[in-house]
Length: 338
Ligand code: ASP
Image (cartoon, rainbow, N blue to C red; front, side, top):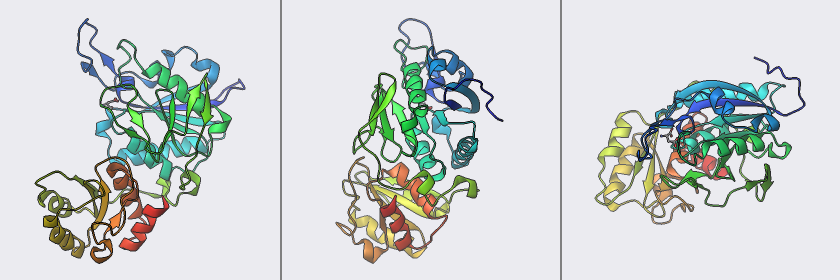
């Protein structure tokens, strides 16, 4: 549907998907901060609750989903990516803001970064506190997300995440704190920040995204199954075998430090690889690259390293890659590229 507008303000489509930013809490004094329900306030009401938004942009809000982001599935990710791509293709849309729960925000942002072929600004935001909390962070985050999406300098930078006045690249950002409003960080630093209502940029990502990505949500019906197994002491083979039995085409091993693998798992990995299951070595640490053939013979085992991607994003990249390639060398190349 075209966004009819008579003003000269940038036209921003706002897609609501739920999360704490659309949450409402228990009003009694002394109620614990966790006593709220995510995904109950409509996208239109979120917009109406933020004075000043109308000065930044002509906003058109739609409610695509109303869920806690922990309930995102690959099918919903694809649905959202297709809708964002459709909106970006409309000549009367200058940018898109997606409101989203913070728990899986980094995964959705990365998926859109790789699969929406548009140079228009696409900005995700959320909140750590529901709108009914004292010092709720959602209204300011939404205002800043719209300010970034509406700004002419924001296009062509890939999908952006605006939280707590920082502008992060979807390639790098992760939720790193369970409660604080400054819960998001990027290992290589944020791209910039929102200063007096406008973005100020300090860096850019060098890896391909959006218009230069080989993946396109419009061409995908489903994603191959890829699982993640996180390392801990006394590691056992069963989770890996269960993923393989469920039909996983790849398993991301979120190993210790440099993606290390306990001796006891090496024959297990060999057996899985012989069955055609790819193994992608990542790290549970949350930052830093995993080095190929260091501490583990990737060449001999035909395994892949994730470069510097965290395990949830490595899952998505492996799944996207496996829609195009099937051998480990080509899968590795995708990780070096993105
Ligand atoms: N569980 C919520 C969600 O991800 C948390 C949040 O939004 O902060 O939807």
